[in-house]
Image (cartoon, rainbow, N blue to C red; front, side, top):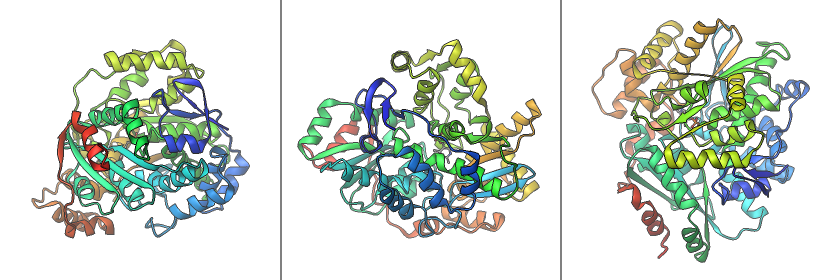
Length: 497
Ligand SMILES: *Cc1c(COP(=O)(O)O)cnc(C)c1O
């Protein structure tokens, strides 16, 4: 198995190279040369295993250049109860008959990003050793709120790395901001930019692919890599929990062998749902992948019409981690669906960069319809769903998860589909306490930590220790810059002249 670039099929690198580099020099994303398979026998066996063992199984298929010992070191370092507050690592909560919430937020920063970012530093430092890269790796991150903190927590004080995070000044929740600006560690930097997530992501991509900046870094013994889901090392770990969920449902007798399930994912950069696509094409029986968006519904339109058009108003919503108009990982999906047609990908993504719009071919449109359903909802409906699930099922969901639940209920109403369904629950409600409380009719007027206490009273959920501790931490990072000053910030932080 090797990895190609979506913009040049002749690129041919190992997984270690792809993970160390983050993005291909041509601006394309790394994709596996084939999708490995998992059989029903495998899934039955996986049911008897721990999460770390299931992860070992999936990684062995994708990271074929890593030794067994290396993979074992990575999965055991990441997926344990020092880092996660549950033995199962990813919990599968039973909401009502045939509907399961895949709780991906039991890690140290309380969002699903931990599932990948707890292991990425292990995968990456192992990769740099394997390919004898004696450079310091500088991780650049653009975040809509959750990736930044999860990446900081994963990479803090990891030898041979430095991490710099950019977040949109007015685009993250109070708790998310506090998590990032109080970050500890000697190798970390955090900076707000005047702009939205797309500006941050475009800025980071431009720095990555700028030859001059790259050479300057090399002169100083450094190289860039990425902890965003453009890095294959972020995607691969996300495939695991879909494979794991199926194995678990099978073991628990919730589904029969071969029975198909739906997967619903609240989507922003299209990474999490793409991991579901890979799981399906490995052989996990999946009926529909349901893509849920908030008012920034560019993906809903794209999946239903085949026209991607980012020329529209940007909405700041109560599910800020999904406030995205350019979904990077779509590029990987389109590469697969177009028959690995790199010329076609270059054409579409050049058009996206230049005019903000492209339209896929009829074949690709048909393939999209076959694999995906899509829907969106606004903040009012998101809140109504939080209240409904709180009242009816005593289940408290965060704002992002509630978008997924709303879109799923719309889907069931429209189709009558009774397929059993796994809904990806992507954040702890405590990360968005104010919005969740107001949704259930509690308009407590207090600071962020007062809101946390209030939410603890009504939800009866334990407050994650990592969030409670933030209250007494000092703010370390206060800088706010214009979006065209990102390069200067990077050079300054790295002492590069
Ligand atoms: C990042 C994030 C999403 C979106 O996931 P993508 O992989 O970018 O599609 C959804 N919910 C939460 C809470 C997130 O942090």
